[in-house]
Image (cartoon, rainbow, N blue to C red; front, side, top):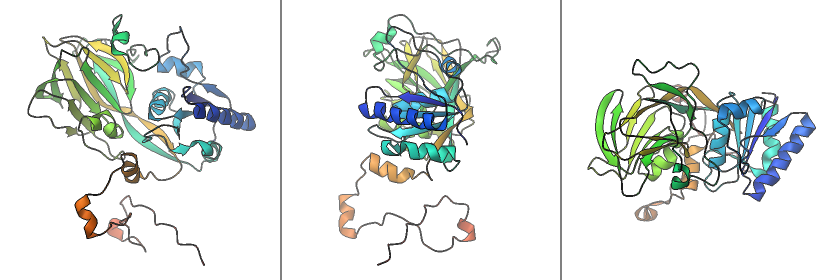
Amino acid sequence: MPVQRIGLVVHQGRPAAVEAARTVFDWCDAHSVPCKELDAWKAHEPRLGSREEAVATGNPDLVVTLGGDGTFLRGARLGAHCDAAVLGVDLGRVGFLTEVPAGKVSRALDAVHEDRATVEERMTLTMRASRPLEIPSGVEALMSYGRAPALPPPHVRPDTDDGKEGWGVALDVIALNDVVLEKLVRDRQVSVGVYLAGRLLASYSADGLVVATPTGSTAYSFAAGGPVLSPHMDAVVFTPVSPHMTFDRSVVAAPDEAVGLRVLPHSGNVAISVDGQLRGVLEPGDWVGVYGAQYRLRMVRMGPTDFYSRLRDRFRLTDAPAAAIDGQAPPLFRPGGTVPDDLAHLRLPPLPPPPPAC
């Protein structure tokens, strides 16, 4: 995909990210590609919504993020509204979403510009709600979300109905990782009826509730005890956070099964965040429906994703001590030679390169 316009999202708190941004601007100058910084946090100015930000920067076809996974999520939110591919440069601590080392930024941009990069699609989530979301005055300071001004509440999508038929209003939201409902104050649980595919699963009293994509299964859902899912699959993962009940397990639903969350009449107020950003507060009687979006995020990769090696590395997985005396497991389970016909449809790791000749 020859790059026509680049949007740049920079973690300004990291000197390495600021230095990498200069490399991107130099590459753009050399290739006559317009480049503008996106989602720049400026003191005493409200942050723009994703759609306004995309329009203000000319709707880039490639968004480059310089930072960690949080910075990548900011870029994904912006890229969703102009159908841009997103390239993540890894300058963070965990790095499940970012991939390219800072020293290889120019090489990665060359690969994208010359159509040599792989574009990988990921499932995303969107929402409907019983009413447009609002953030009451003072709540942002109470929640202390992040180090920057909160995003504005999401707009109602222009194609939505007015909600009079009971389907609620469609919100202009795209989540790559998760939608989270959580308590506003420490001494008051949230009480929420949880519905899967329209049927009541259970009413929960909990610190929070997480609805995640497979990509987001290694984020908050995992920290709350949820399963790890392959990012190459489509599914919706529901995970309660510290529920006051015996059933505390996650449920993995099909991608076309919505998760309905209805705040019960005597619950405390509920903060709702999208990919870690506070976007509104729900009151007793409100509800949201979270479901697979039609939009799929396009992530730029330099080659096939080695998700499970990254999982082992990033979480520092160690082998069972009891297994040590039984021998060491090889790093790959992948015979050489021609792949049999009945296995040709499988996602298999590439063979390691041959040893150098003596």
